[in-house]
Image (cartoon, rainbow, N blue to C red; front, side, top):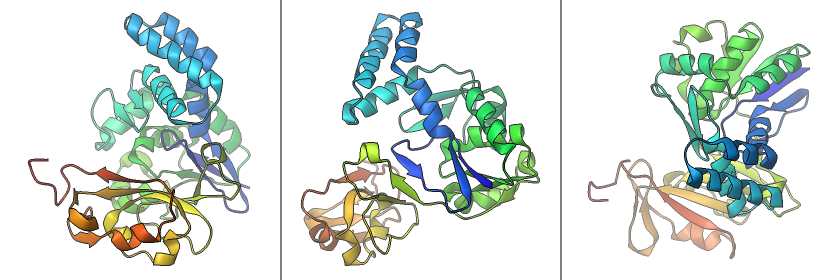
Length: 296
């Protein structure tokens, strides 16, 4: 059987759905759960050398996580836990990852971070055990923040039976092919489906997660984070099945007009009227993108 591996760090409120014939190993879920364990976090907070206020934040986050509710407070507590996790190569946050030396835009810096990273060692060990039983290993890279872990997996498992796939690979495959450390690794544009984790969605039906250039599903509930320009061309019937939406815009004008990531103005009124009442909709302003003036 093939093995589908999700490396950290990516959105932990969603999960990858493996196709038939594939076993899923969600290292992202495992690492987040390990770092956000209340007992571990409380112990770590007591040993922090960053002052009493940081320790207080750690203990408060542990208390919230111990409560077990999946709400905004829980989300912030997980973010605190990730931020307090020390590593010589990376700094974690609720919505991303930074390298302690260099940038994730540099393959050389990412390779260096992958070799020095210690936080992921337990997950690498688990991946090695699972890969030994697999025919082929597929590593899903949907986000650039997963690159250090993905490169570490290549180093630990070897390139011979390993394939990188996912949204980031589909968008940046040409650049990845030029990375010497990925020589021998197969690259595929295939992106497995994601759904919102049931713990974060109070619905019995599965809610598929739509982002990037993915189209809305032909049936069933969905939620997503999408460029307003892409949303403007979605069929109206798709919005009736929307359960939550974040629209990325570069400018919002009067009467529902907004600029998408390409700077072109689109009319959002038609889609807003098609979304059922009560569905949460937010706008994310992309500062510095086309259509944003220097005064923003």
